[in-house]
Length: 224
Length: 224
DNA sequence: TCCCTTCTACCCCTGTGGTGGTAGGGCGGA
DNA sequence: TCCGCCCTACCACCACAGGGGTAGAAGGGA
Image (cartoon, chains in turn yellow, brown, orange, blue):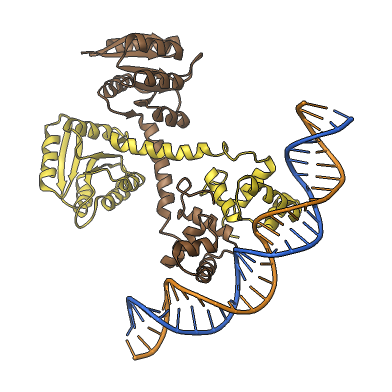
């Protein structure tokens, strides 16, 4: 049973080149083509393709909006997003919207064919160049997290705890209540902590708490 | 010209299964096998393989250390790290150490063959499951960054700028100098910003700056 | 035109924050 | 045993932060 593919691209040449390429591939049946997102959504409803090759930049409705509409309507559709250049913002949006893959147009023909076959069986697929960027982001984030808990020179356990609470924006009084000690003691701990870290204001202490990884954005208790 | 492969795994069964698999594949020549990292480093020096299939968990010297040694000694070697389960910490280490790929042992035989061929021509390769995790991390980080600039209700451009500077731990005086306005004006801006965000101390403002994504850990100017 | 927002700037007042010093009890290493 | 570190706690002092109000200049929109 051939893989049914819909090609969506506003550029005539690109669209037809893809159609010809897919047509020549055994086991792949290009069932239709669209030149904008609106047409694409309509054709998915009509043709029920297995795979959609979707350009991003298009008139009327862009590829990302079209992808959202298509997946809302027919989740089993495998959408592969095509892009001319590596645009990481789109990677995020496309993948969280549920796109099955993300490849660049300068990918060799045989790899595009392979990509269609890959997503058709339900696997994810991302271009190496894009994967590399993902890895770099991952590595960067990971490095930041690894630096956590490791640095913070010479702080006693209590002082580390104090710094963590400073990092949540707590006042001395609030810290005292949370640790069930007197505010005077908190002031002493804060004093020592800031001296060791060479800080002069508690705002800097909050920065230090975040930068050291003691406090991670997204895991904080806001509001006061 | 066949792709010369070295197989490194402490488990006899896994090692020989891989050797047999690679032996049966046309264009692939399994030239040797090692059962620990130290042997692997020695064999790379002797055999100069194109590709190394490297297990992580091994006695004597683990796969990641061996990978580092091998790439320091012979950078053109393509190391593919094998793992039983998806262990993201290793992904980071392996890839930043220069590994060409990262695949799981439960990958179907034909895909393992394909992986060897892929890295042999210098391309990167990562298992879909691992890619998925990378994407999730990327998406998570990206989401945090996207929330920036978007949320932060009703702040004027100047107030946003003030909040960003508050987020670096700056005092009113420092902010005044950086923006070339009077400290009195800074106090006014700070006052309005904090009222709008329902904050009472500047430490909370620092927290808000980080949590909103206005300030990203790792991109801050410490010290003061 | 007038109004609203924004950015600029100042005064007054209260309070928390930040720094100095002092000190006792507990605990572990020399 | 004694020394040193850690946690606890207090006092005194002053600067900066935070909240109140007021106000003029500039720019955009009704």
